Structure formats: structure tokens, C-alpha cells
Picture 1 (cartoon, rainbow, N blue to C red):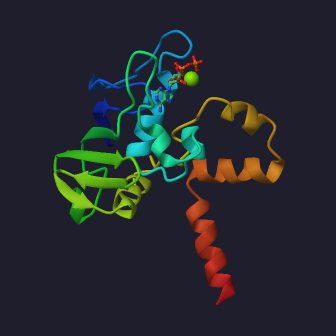
Picture 2: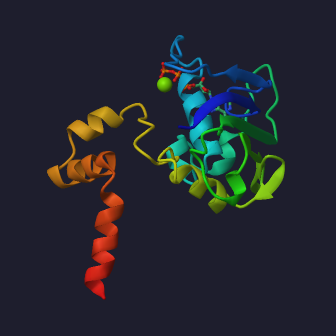
Length: 184
Ligand code: ATP
Ligand code: MG
């Protein structure tokens, strides 16, 4: 098991000031009025795990995750999100992840793209994505269900719904390996 213990945002979407959230074990609920930033928090989690599509972040380009300013505050040029994980049970494996606590940070500067760090060391986007994908909590995994997705699943065609069920059952990897074997 991997447990997210802390999330810190700065300059990310509506979270212009540094904001830190402690995530206790068990169920966490985020409540608040429309537009207060609940979905932005979930997007921060998805983003720090390596989301590479601006559309998935409800933007047209990746720089749109940077605080864009309001009537009262100027825009920022930098956004940073860090997430801390309790990895004592080594839910995240591999040489990069061999530590009891992991801190993954992603930072974006307007016009110059993203950089990632793991426990203070520079890593590639791919490293961050693989780290989380192996624990079945990737930016695109079914562990995160965005607003509107439930409706999309209900309205999905049977084949698309089957793919989701197969991913939930953990057999989609098996299918792609079988496909690869049949091609040989
Ligand atoms: P709902 O209950 O309607 O789902 P929510 O709590 O999920 O609302 P979010 O969608 O997370 O709300 O937040 C939307 C707010 O974030 C809007 O006010 C929007 O202007 C603001 N926002 C999004 N991106 C940025 C950005 N880059 N810069 C500044 N503000 C932003
Ligand atoms: Mg929302």
C-alpha cells in the first residue's frame, strides 16, 4: 500500500498562495461551494503524477495550470505541486523509489515546460509516470474519476465499458501481452 500523506500547491490554478494539505489515513472528503477549487486539488494530484494532456487538466495548453491572475492579483509565472507518500511497505518499487518517504515535485515555468524531482533529485517525466503507474495510481488510472466521467461510463459503448472493467480487474496488461505474443 502507498499512502499519500501531504499535498502542497503553489501558483497552481486557483491556489496562488502556498497551500498544504495533510492527508490522513482513511477516507478524505473535500467540500466547498462551486468554484472553490475542489477539482483543482484533484487535478494537482493528477498533474504531479505526470499528466501530459492539457485537455485532461481543463486547459488548452500546459501553462494554463499556472495561476492566471484575477482583478486583484497579477498572474504568476511558476506553479509547483509536491506530493509526499508513505512508502514504508514499498508499494512503489524500483531503484528510484527505495525510501520510506517519497516526495515528488513537479514545477512548471511559463514558456519553458515542466521539471520533476524525486526526493530532491531530478527525474524525467517518464520516471514519474512509471513510478505511479506501477502502483496502479497513475494520472490516467481509474483510481481517479473526474467530474463528468460517471456519465461518460454510463453512456459508453459495451466495448469501451469492457476495457474499463478489464483495467479494474487488472487483466488489461495480460491482454496486451497476449496480443504481442500472437503477433510473433
Ligand atoms: P464545482 O463544485 O463547480 O465542481 P470546484 O470546487 O471543483 O467547483 P474548480 O473547478 O476546482 O472548482 O475551480 C474552479 C476555479 O478555479 C474557477 O474560479 C477558475 O477561475 C479557477 N481557476 C482555474 N484555473 C485557474 C488559473 N490558471 N488561474 C486562476 N484561477 C484558475
Ligand atoms: Mg469540480
